Amino acid sequence: YKFRSPEPVHLCQQDAPSPHISPSSSALQSHSLPPGVVAEPHFIEDHNVAPVDNNPFSKDHPLDNVIGNPSRLVSTRKQLATDSLWCLYSSVLSKIEPKNFKSAIIKDCWFQAMQDEIHKFDRLQVCELVPQPDCVVIIALKWIYKVKLDEYGDVLKNKARLVAKGYRQEEGINFKESFAPVARIEAIRIFISNAASRNMAVYQMDVKTTFLNGELKEEVYVSQPEGFVDPDHLTHVYRLKKALYGLKPAPRAWYDTLSRFLLDNNFSKGAVDPTLFTRKTGKHILLVQIYVDDIIFASTDPKDYDMFSNEMSSKFQMSMMGQMSLFLGLQYGRLPNVLTASRPDLVFAVCMCARYQAKPTKKHLEALKRVFRYLKGTINWGLWYLKDTAMALTAYADADHTGCQDTRRSTSGSAQFLGDKLHSRSKHIDIRHHFIREQVERCVVKLYFVSTDYQLADIFTKALPRQRFEFIISRLGMKSMSSTILKRLQEEEGE
Image (cartoon, rainbow, N blue to C red):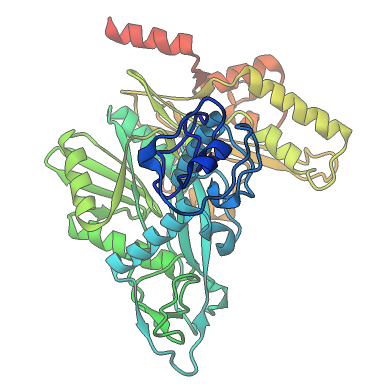
């Protein structure tokens, strides 16, 4: 603490002397000052002074002389410096996600995040405040707090999102359509295969406030958000102009807005995959794959990267993330002669363990530990997509009839290759794939018998010995991505 005291020469951490605290007589001076100390006459004023102990190290100082909160524990200089750093960190970023509004409002970082969300509503003109209509369902709002992490696990940002409790909406009454297509993981792998064969770099971008850009066709009313209620219109509600997170028709509204914008900019929508958009300019082609608010794109013309980024930024608020590294939970990397992606070698083991997750036994735990040991030894392995390879489509299919000893159920699997690159794998064959029969009759698809020695789909249907397992994963395109191999590839490219 800092104390106001008439003994400035004996207190190391002393503020400048105050003219309001001075002795009024020589008798008082001799009583209040320790021996050997003489008070200067220009500090003398005539008024009462609180008594001070003769002991310069006394802790019994008058309460009026204490600067600060007396009930607080004493802190050293080092502790005060540390506290200031923690206060600065707390006001910038937080690693803890609040559970409700009351616990979030006391933190500056989360309060700022909520204000940013409200400002986005105003900027995008999401809603308007109106008197509450009669006989209309009012949907409540809720604050959701999320700590955004980067690929290294560090805190990237604190995000507060205002979400509608859309479970009260009923189809046919509150909305008519809610379906919105999203990219399948197989489509993502085909996209990567195509980019690798054409030697194209894949870039990634993210749309901020995604659903707030979608225009609603339905009339929806929501309550005022907690903590941001208009004091002059306490009973008013908001009528939504744009979609809101949590509403059932929100994904469809966003997809319609984005696809309409891309089509207006000379893109063509895929006939089979409605999340794939292409634009041809002369001999060059620009590919765009969307997954809700995550977008990846690649082009044979490097100029298209900046052009497409500027087009998207002119309509939406975008976050440019550079070359793709992490997409839909899968890590990707681009090397001088290869593209790398995820690994499919654990499909059978993981699915087998998942069958008994409701009632596991000791042998299932041992099998799971064995999987972890395998992962530890092959942590640097992944799929490699080689450049400048053919684009022929090849598929392998296999079935293990009544292979499960507990249920006598059959296991089937398939693997699809685009050129030499695995882009799809499955543990079952659905009825929707029976159209292959028609394609065979039309001579569009040719079927060949593949013996066990060359059947790559065996890895999805049964447990294999070590030699057989290593042979198949090498044919699937899996290789080690250790630092030594990556360095060697870069040196070869430099030569």
